[in-house]
Length: 603
Ligand code: AGP
Image 1 (tube, protein in one colour):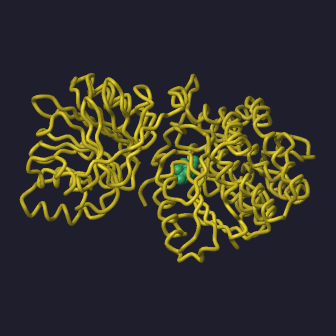
Image 2 (image 1 turned 90 degrees about the vertical axis):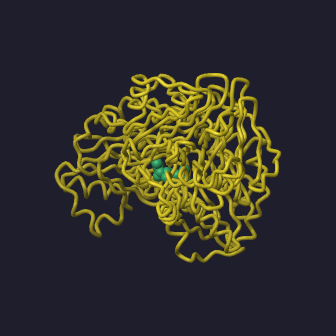
Image 3 (image 1 turned 30 degrees about the horizontal axis):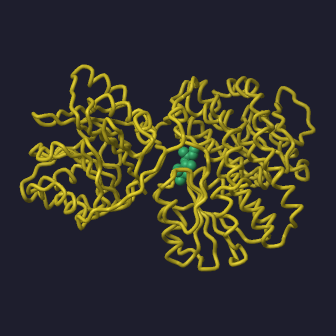
């Protein structure tokens, strides 16, 4: 939901900012803009459309400066347009800002300022920040920023430039991420690490209501009482390559192919001697009488898989709630409930709200998060980091797989602690989980068949996914993946539910993707397959216990053998590749699907 970047240093800010925006485009891509300051004032270029449009505009009207800010937008208030793009300036052209977040009281603030004769030019909530800053400004930019922050309700990550302080770039945040990068040739603000990684791997993570004052020489931090703060400088260990396409046509395909490594790294973080192992071992599951998993989108689907695994192994009730529902439903959780929050970004607004609601009710919170230092990671009682590295494609693949793994580990560790399984059984399960990276790599060898099959599926208006138990849970993820990148309508059903209504939608040449990884349920799902084929459907059957033989109506992808509890880690790879190649054959913008953004930091 919007990406911001800023630079102050000894180099021209423009190419640095444009390059940073490319790395942040996954956060929003309906318009973008850049402002630089020189001794004459601000030069601003803003453009509706993809970042390439902004680059063209900047090339046509070159600007330069050693201090600048940039923004890539996912519209919330006001349509995507040149005028609504950031940066926004106050009407005296004295202060320029970029904003990621939502200002909830912008209408009241705008009315107040309009009554004082200030004229607004955009429909955005963000412009109010620039106008308010100019209105408050009496000479000291720190005082101005503090006053503005005190007046704003909602969420914000802000980059601010002021003509009175041409040697400073100011940043402040609340409920939206912001990092500060430092290097010998200049200093940076950014929504995410990849935006600065080609310049530096040294970053500070800004906390809520902390102010960063960047100059060419360095950065200083203050609280809103203007007291100096000491902050820890972190070193990012992943390389710039992990945030580049590396020869693949899309990030999504690269990220799918990276999964064997991600699985391996995440397994090592639990079975080796890392923080994840220590944290899981320190959590006493016997204190809880129920587990609630809450998350959004794919992370919610990971929770659905985990419910089957945990309930089967731990014999403990596990509820899975959409975070957007949990936050408003007056959930029955207390100090005897373990609430697990799953989030790649750690910044999803609904999941943050669910976490805070769970804490308010006294529940113990555990998060599974990919982005280090994110809000959810910082605020939960226990944090487990997935080791997926930066995930750039909007459709999650490798981070989802890492979430699944972490949830399997929790299930096995909890089951052992609760005495539901003995240590030999736990070891057996760990061995099975540890075999996943090699099996995933083996499965990826079938990529050509999946690509070829998907190329025949672009014409479908609707595709159904079915499975039973855990296969149903992963079918939900397959369906979401297909919808979000191929724009084909799809639904996931528990196989047994078909006959209760949905089967009426099956007609000649409907496509049904069926999943079967539990031998004891094979007969049941196969009879669903027969039912849909006899009504004219074609079936892509994915599994490791399939006894049927392929024919013109039935195609099969054979999965490597694995305990069905952990099979979603393999079936999901086929589902991801299938969606990817359907979308690729439709020529769609796979990494940046329409209307979506990578991390949904608004409600
Ligand atoms: C999945 O492909 C999505 N783009 C989306 O559903 C995502 O999983 C969801 O928005 C949750 O994001 P998070 O994991 O960053 O919290």
